Each structure stands twice: as structure tokens, then as C-alpha cells.
Length: 198
Image (cartoon, rainbow, N blue to C red; front, top):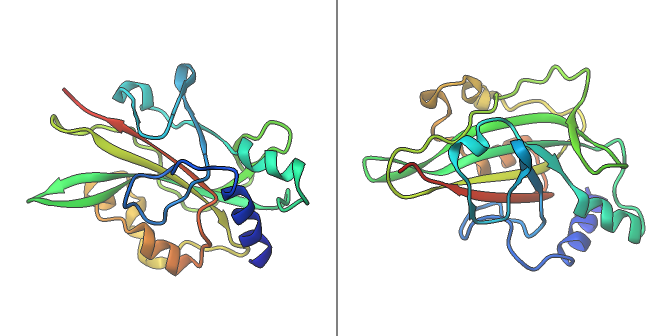
């Protein structure tokens, strides 16, 4: 845990711009590469069309590997990661609720390409990817955040209800509470984009 915290602190020093929206917690200044179909790459805070993000993106941690190769090695090839995508602007009766769009554990990092992929023998519970589909009105913010997965990790029982692929099941997902119950460290990296429906 201490080794990982030192690694994140060093990596943070290489970034200045926040990679999560203002006020979002847990926040990070570390860049998560997010590339959707047709090579659409996410730049923090930029707008995407809903159909550009309809399928799960390719993720990369090139920034992590860059510091790994230039500093004392703090990244280990045995590490696993988990990613979340959350709409933080769903409104019900004047109150905003976070909506879970994606939760994928058991991601492994290629030291050659920097890309993340699902471990071939993974049988961990997950929330299948659901693309953005905000109602007409102001753009919604979609946040992607990735964490190092603890060894012997198990999904907290309180969060199993969020895995069903329905809005009703996934509404109200509390990432801060998840981090606490799952014993996660600070995020490795993040990114976010805006999507609106005209």
C-alpha cells in the first residue's frame, strides 16, 4: 500500500490539469486514456456525441508506464485494476444522483502497449457497459475513474444490487462509499466527458 501511494504521488507530479470534474470525489490529476470507436479519444471536459460513446472504450495507462520506465519501478505487472464510468448529473425531483454506467474489475495492463484488457479467466461480477443517453437539456458529465484492485478483492455485498443493467438498479451509486467498503486506495487515473441530447 505504501509503495503504491508513493507511485501515485510521483505520477501526480507529472500532471497539472485535473482529470476529474470540479467537486468530484475521489479526484485525480492522473490521465486515463479513453478511446471510443473510430478512434474518438476523450480529452477531459470535452463533449462527445452519444453515438460516439455507445460501446465500451479502450483504456490505456501510458502515463503510468512513462514514469515506470523513467523512475525507480513502482508499477508491477501482477497488479490488477478496476474501472468505473458514472453519470453524475441524473436529476430526480431537483436532486442529482450518480448513475453507474460501467464497472469492470480484473483489468490487466500490458507493459508493452499500455493498454488495459480484461483478464482472460476473470469471473468477477461486473456491471456491463451502458452508453450515455441523457434526456434533452443540459449536458451530463460522464466520469471514468480507475483504481488498483486489492489482492483477494471481493465486490462489497452492499453493491451487488447495482450490477443489473437497468437505470433503476444503477441509480444512486456512491463511489466514495464503494471505495471505503472495498478498501481501495486513491484513484490511479481518471477522465471525463460531456454528452447532451438535443
